[in-house]
Image 1 (cartoon, rainbow, N blue to C red):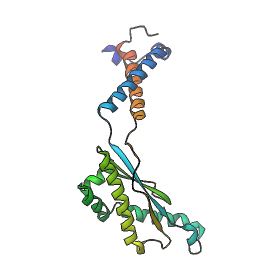
Image 2 (tube, helix red, strand yellow):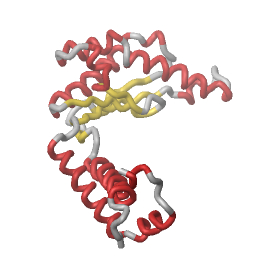
Image 3 (cartoon, rainbow, N blue to C red):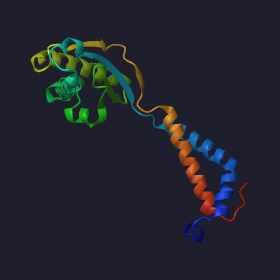
Image 4 (cartoon, rainbow, N blue to C red):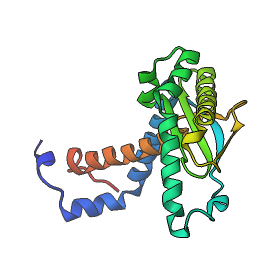
Length: 204
């Protein structure tokens, strides 16, 4: 107990830094533990659908000064983001999947790259088929709602579904992240043990 209360001395830290075998052992054991956790409790699947959003800025240059183009893109993109998360859009996904809108908003659906170019519609689920369906349905609902609300956006806007079938499927968190986190945890725990619990032991 006294070892835990007493702060480590310079000699303790120097001795710990020389114990490279301890660091390697901690990283190895921690990494293996992280991979074991991944195997026993795998993260959800993540599917990605893609919709191409083209604001055709070059066609609007005659009407919008160069200094206002950035604000124009930001404003139009923000309106589309609101549409993607709108109740009507998500209700369409909910009707197809059987999940409620609150669940979809609670981290199941993730929107990425909301600017000029490819928008990524992600969906997470423990069921790979459901993840793919959610992502595809969300991208489809967004495209349909945007077309129905075309009068609310710039007339130069073009939205095209580019990937809503045979969607890429991965785990929401990769195995490497688990291994890296486990390795870091192993290093910290072994360093704590060496400095405080086994302070009187010789480490080399």
